[in-house]
Length: 83
Image (cartoon, rainbow, N blue to C red):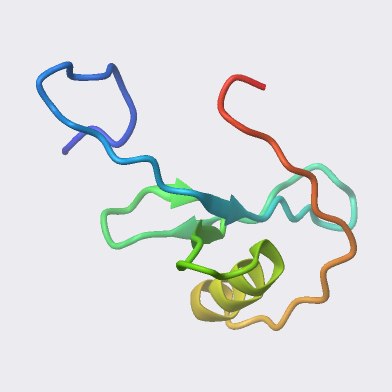
């Protein structure tokens, strides 16, 4: 299985990609919703922001695509690498 996360390879030129992801708890707040991709990895629902797109619209679109749920966003916290 190919690594999804790991050490940075200095011979590869990486592109920064902005994205948004949802943390959705169950009613007991002891489990978090994930989606399973085609490789069998469990990830938070979300994805990359299209050029000129808003964070809110991106997350609404990704949630519908990945879970089938239409979401009403109550709050959005922003975190960047290193926070």
